[in-house]
Picture 1 (cartoon, rainbow, N blue to C red):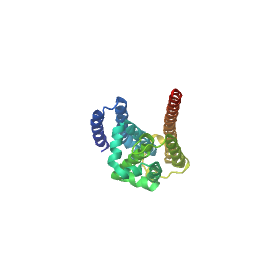
Picture 2: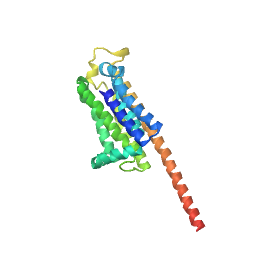
Picture 3: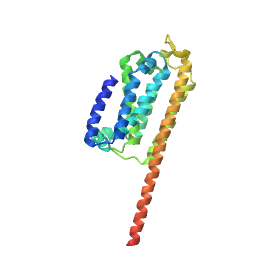
Length: 250
């Protein structure tokens, strides 16, 4: 399913990329984003995630929600982003507001990882696919205000605050999985365990993975935003100096 969807998305993207004469770097970013989703959900990783280890399921989730979405959005040209925002209209403008996108992402992130929700999805393949689609969707929604300037441009300081808030408010899930007893009955009841990893250790390792991964990804986002902020400050300073020189000549 996700291989076909990824192939379709890539075909549509390449057509638009050629029309917009996008850069090779954007093409590479979008392609890697699609491949991350397709490979993580259609490979032995999927088999291990569903039949053996929670750790690998959590790895899938961070790949499709935290790694792939920023690459997909970075691959879009400004014209593509503008077209998406324009077609989305007011509903899209509303949900991509930081004050809306962040709560939606947090609610989705915690809700999907609730023990009962997780267990039901794992026992029904179609629900598991729905879960994966939701993870991709909330990931794209979360990263849009950070990377994109359409339909509004959030000040860089506001984006840094947004990322910091996301890090603080999402950290509790990783900590809970790291230190809590097994929360997922599905994985406790599996007849086979890989590499002798118990259900408790499996969950604890998954929590460590999630906490570490999110810290690194969001830290990278803050670094990128700080570089952007310093560049904006330099540009404002140069503009101010140019204005002073012009006034001096007058």
